[in-house]
Image 1 (cartoon, rainbow, N blue to C red):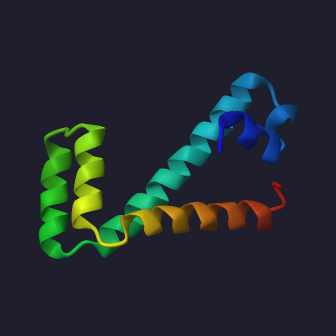
Image 2: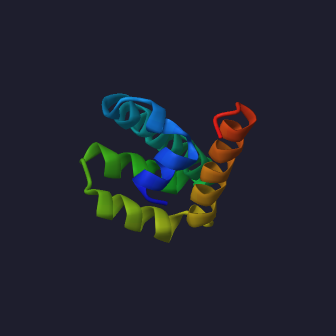
Length: 96
């Protein structure tokens, strides 16, 4: 979904551009945190230790993505589930 689609779906066009940007950033952060929490829950202890070391050395986003895809069973589904839950929460709150 594009940014303009999100703005339309969430009815954000009623806000000034700066507020739209802030709201989209907040939604992205919520999705990121939710996805990361799910992924960490799915990791075994060794993967958690390795993931922590990866983050400690400031790995690139590509390295983190590769790690998650290779070491976490169901990583893509966890992401989809988080986004689905976020959309459901927004709908339940009457946002769209």
